[in-house]
Structure formats: C-alpha cells, structure tokens
Image (cartoon, rainbow, N blue to C red; front, side, top):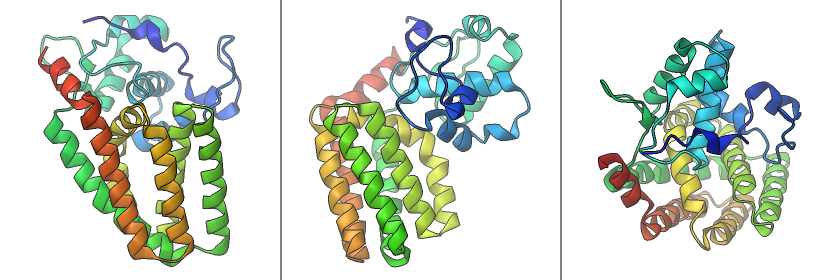
Length: 267
C-alpha cells in the first residue's frame, strides 16, 4: 500500500486557515473554515502542543476530503519530517484520530486510514438521518426571520459552488449550513450526539458528493428543505432531511465506495 502523504500538500495548517493567508507560497484557500471545523470537532484547542494540532488537522482533512484513501498507510517518520517534529506529537495526533474512527492502529503494523464496511455505513446513515429529522423540526419551530435569511444566504453560496463544480467548496458550506441549523434548533444534547458522529460522517458525506450527479441532486434537496423550514412545516422538513440522507447513502452504495473501502481494509 502506498504511503500517499505527498498527495495532500494543499491542506493548510490551522493558524493560516483562520488568517486567510497562504502557507509556503500556496494559493489562498477557497473553502472557508475547513481546519477550523476539524479543530472544533476534535477539541484540539484543549491541547497545548501545536504539532499535535497541525498533524491531526493535516491528516484529518486529507482523510475527509479523500486524498488519503481507506486502508492507506500513514508513515509516522515521514509525518515527523514534514512537520519538523519528534515522533511523539505525530503518535499523539494519530491516536486522537483513531479515537474518532478516522485512523486504525494495530500492533506491529503501521497506522493506516480507517475503512468502512457497507453495514457500518448503513448504520451511520440510519442514525444520522433520524437525528437530522429532529433538527429540521426544531429549526422550523425556532428559527427567527434573521435566521431564515441567514440560511437562505448560505444556500445561495452553496448553489454558486455547485454551479462551479467545486465539490470541496460546496461540501464545507453544507457542513456549515447544518452546523448553523443545529445551533438554531437549540437542543444541546442533540447537537452533542451529532458532533460525536461528525468526523465519521464527514468522510462519507464527501464521498457521496463525489459521485456523478450527486452535487446537483444535493442542491435540489437543500432548496426543498430550506423552503419547508421557511414555511414552518417541521414535519415536511424532517421528512426531506431523512430522504436526503437516504439519497446520499444510495449514491455511496451505487458508486461502490463502501465496498472498495471494505476491500482496502481486508487487503
């Protein structure tokens, strides 16, 4: 299995992501808050070692956005050289990602990107779909006029990214939209459960959007969902969110992504 670490040089580190400045002469990042969202989900601000944050963010984004594939080796020596650090923060970063289901670490074997069996993918989507249905009901009930205007503006930005064929740009704006919806819903317990699933689902959601025709279909789904919320129809919003989640799962299964992932794990 190839190491593949050289394939993700465009993933930037957290400090530069927040400042909007390029790293090492790279072009400015067109996708907002990629690293910021990952830092939040991993609770990396609670860690004092900057190298742990850098490695975990770099590898995590590579996995989520598909540049590091399921079953691919993660060479800790190469990572320590890349970040000019000892192997200790690299090991800590990989262990952190293992706890979140993104990395597998086995005895006497090199760490590697975690794989998903088809059954595991279905289970994750089943749970997520029903949780998002609850979010839709709460948003339709609690959203203010300003909240609705914000959701509509975010949807417009997503449509622009879809028109440009920018999967990553659309994906991270979609992540931000659903994050905003959970905030509007106001149920902290529900938000916490969704966050606990977030890193695993981000990988699957990105893989789904990469399937042919899925980007355009996702836009249409989001338009209907926002319209239902604007009409204060929580039942319809919940149904549409569940249906959109089922459609995303169907795209993954039709494209054979989960089967390839399981094959990589067994290989």
